[in-house]
Length: 236
Length: 300
Ligand SMILES: Nc1ncnc2c1ncn2[C@@H]1O[C@H](COP(=O)(O)OP(=O)(O)OP(=O)(O)O)[C@@H](O)[C@H]1O
Ligand SMILES: [Mg+2]
Image (cartoon, rainbow over all chains, first blue to last red; front, side):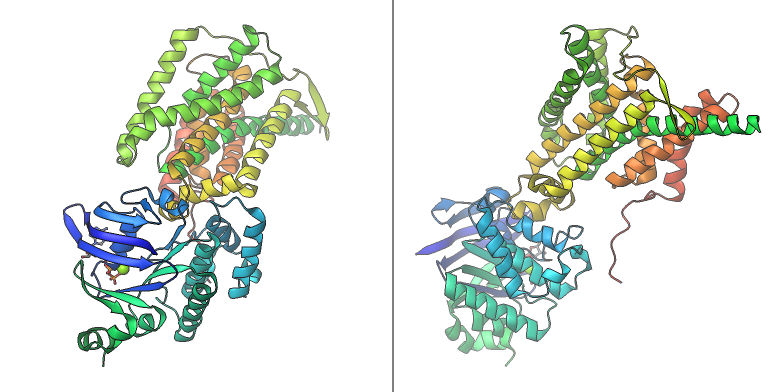
């Protein structure tokens, strides 16, 4: 089943058109990557899904038309979006950040379990729970952002450059984690990534964007062998 | 020796009554800060809304013969509802408008609320009875008015409730997040627009307390809150307009300073308003962030 489907999505910032008709599909339970150079429209695509930028076309999530819905309503349908820049609630404590991740949930006991779960994933969290999130390092904030997103128990996780500013070993860990959660719990993930070789290892399918258009799409291993992808994004 | 004792006695009394007035400024300052944090706009109508609420309390007590405590609680609830309604009716339509537009909206609200109160209750000064006896008690060798102690106690309770709400409840946490990080909060499912309305309601409720506390001291009339608003601004600016705790401490400092200025400077009672303005200007000039204002948290 297709969990998320974009049809001819056009997005504009005032007079600037950033997306020129994107078609893309994210099957339920899959990990899909969005690749492309700076300014290609990757972030804008995620923002259009979350209702953070005006768009036309169609965006169907789980049977709902979500085009131009308010971000809070999209979140309430089960879409967790870790935005570019991480969206850290800097003045709030680490723990409060996690609680805000679970803000829309009513199942308190499960929320408690999930707090334990993310602390299991990121063992540094418990000892720093009372600190303002602003005091975390960039990489720790990125991990916190992912932990916060998981607290929503999303059906769809949107990740905007999760590897940004992280040490390679930490990136590995996080990608392994995302893969494990995807495998074990069937969490669907749409991930924007600059690091194409890593993204193609993580994702089953990928789309390559250029100036607001999809120029290539396909299974990851196919794309990894593709001449132009290798030249432009993999560097060999 | 005796003279020295009486000087100390009178000084201590001034300090206590300054703290009591400061508590009143602190409530209104806190109301200002709550809205400022949520929308970067000072609500110039905050004092008038408090005045209006106080007239409602007056009506509940004198016309409906409700006991003071009941009228007090009811007024707080009505003020909360009124704040929410004002936000929905007058502020929401200007969502996303420039700050200057919103400032003008609150100034318009100022005149509307003031005029409406004049229309309903007139401009004749009314006495608003204090719930506290006019006696004094001796505390550590100093005579202090029960009125002053009462005002301080009521304010402490209100502040404790407000701070606990923000610190310990899920909704309070969401309101803080929505005020500081609207975009991130919306991605987490927070209905930020609704949070803003709740913020206005809360601010109006806290402001109503300051109105009901000041009315027995100054007489009730539609212009009663205007000096209080000025001093609340001084308190908020001094404490740091982004800082709820700062606004409270700023309120107490301003209250005590004003009491001392009023007592010890020649012609001091007339210097209170200019002094309030001087505090505002001096802080904005020399320490714009105030005592507790947004010192951006830095990693060390
Ligand atoms: N707030 C904005 N206002 C105007 N134009 C914008 C805005 N945000 C993005 N754009 C434009 O939209 C286009 C797509 O930007 P977008 O942020 O989606 O790119 P991206 O693929 O995420 O790039 P990067 O890899 O650098 O993050 C760019 O040309 C950019 O200049
Ligand atoms: Mg981007």
